[in-house]
Image 1: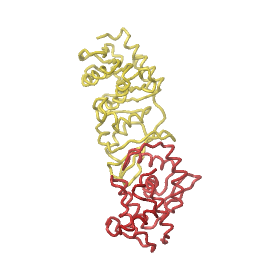
Image 2: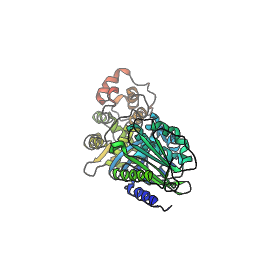
Image 3: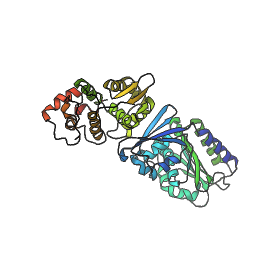
Image 4: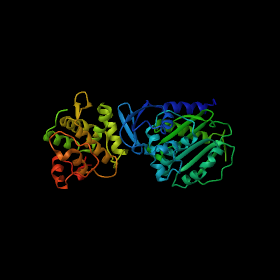
Length: 250
Length: 165
């Protein structure tokens, strides 16, 4: 894909990537279950032995000399199989995986597991849900890929003044939902990308986005960001794409 | 290994009466030595999401706390050498009874049960000064309950104090 829109998204993705972060895992042994999850991210991982049980294991995330946070790896099973519940579900909101994704904002990832991508997306959707206003943009490549998300987005749309825009190649006809605008991507502007962006609803602290591209079949390269300028530019692009006559309305 | 005096044992109990200092010890006992940032990460992570009750802590506060209070205190006790300028801590060879106390404390810190003073007394031979260590750390039966308060005062480690920051 070499559309202008694709180039813009790649530029934004590159802008969103920050310095490499490092992760230290603590526990009886390097936990095989978490390795595939951490390997998806461009991070340096080291292990420190501690004489504690596997279920008490934890990890810390650092950017240079700045401590960012820690995550219980008691939920490592969950990291391997990320919870993909609804974004307002409390357990999902506090899940170790979501915390990890949040701590690894600005870190490039390559995911070949769509479940992990969906779970990562929940961080964005949850912020939109909690804020309850503004616009949430979601592009899941094709509308058929959006099919499984319909109940989630139907609920999101019913939250306060939150407006939702969904882009996708027209290979499926979604039901009509209040406050959800479906934009059929007839031109293929965004079919290689998995993008979810929330404009913050007027609160810049809530702005966030995930930009991923299916660079190879089934393999997504992307980044999650809270960078205000990146999110503003991205939601600007998406807003223009929405208005663009090249995409036909539903 | 030389014998430790009652005063030294008392200092050791006092050093181990604080959860953050014990976590530092568990870490250093495994790694041999560590710099301050890595100890801060270990302790902050443990307190926030690791074994035992979770605390909300600020990493800067933990660093200041370790550097100015806890590591000097561990240095004083003889368990650890802390190079204050280089900010590097090194685990010292410690008497067997200190290792046993640490093991019992670790059991308590990694379970939901509070630190069991009876067990600590059992492994330390109730603070006797002969320097011989009791190698039956988990029986918990040889301690005289009447002596709890004595050693408890000496150690500064009453069960109720054990998670005080």
